[in-house]
Structures are given as structure tokens and as C-alpha cells.
Image 1 (cartoon, rainbow, N blue to C red):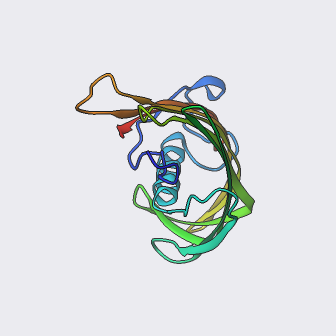
Image 2 (spheres, rainbow, N blue to C red):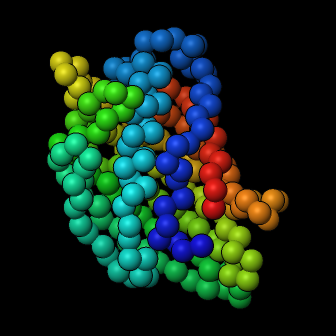
Length: 195
């Protein structure tokens, strides 16, 4: 597996825990219902997943890409690597700053702004001989959104735990979860996608 390949699935399986929100259909403060928060997250990460990086240790990459419906997002990424025996450890920090970035989420047009940015911090351990890997990390920050006459903030504060699963050699998978806060909801997001 190349460490520059985004791990997050295009269509992630979401399992939300009602937790602190008690199953309430009104958002606890972010202005989005539970379903809208899910769709918002899926659209944002689907877009982020399409961004490719050089994956060169020590290189600070900075560039902007056009969003699907208009506007831009700036990406700033740094990465370091170290090898210990057959294991490579990769540490990466990615800042994602939308600037009038327009995305469709569940048929709703959102315009996103970073305040100031969403940050991914990840550590990936890869065993070269087997291709097995473990990814741990954090995703945090605030996205401001506007949709029609509505607007609000979506707080992201998620812990990432993903790994390779070769239990079916014919269909290797990436499995794991994200846990934490999404748009004011406590969530547990299950991930299962082909490797």
C-alpha cells in the first residue's frame, strides 16, 4: 500500500450512537440534523479522498484544488518517515482549508469555509513484507457552512483507528472506525472498504 493513497472510503458505513443527543432530530448546536450531519461528512470526505499527494518524506506540499460545484480548497501537507526493520512508520499532518468550496450532500448544496482549517494528524505503520498496516490519527477543526438561507458550524473532533484485514485473501479490506464528535453529535463511524 502506498502511504499517499487516501484510506477513507468513498462510501463509508456510518453507525451513529445517539449518546448525548438522545436520538433528538434537532442538531445540538451545529444547525444540522443527524441525517444531514452524516451526509455532510460523507460529501466532505469523499471530496478529500480524491486529492492525491506526492508522498515524499520531508516535502511540504501546498496546493489548491477546485471543488466539485465551484470554489477552492487549500491543502498543506507535511510527512516524515522512519524505517525500523521491516516496518515503516509514516507521520503526516494535513491542513484542509475550504474557501467557498461547494459540495452536494444528499441533494443539498453546501458552501464550506475553513475556520481556519480542518487538520488530519495520522501515523501509519506498514509492514513491507506483508503489506499489512495500522493507521491511528485525529481529525479536528471547524467547518463553516452555508446552504440557502441556513448556515452554521460543524465541529469535527474524531479519533481514527484503521487497519488492513487479510482474513479473506481474495478480498483484502481496510477496517476500523472513527469515534468522537461530528457536528455536535457523538458518533461511532464504522469503516469497511476494499484495500
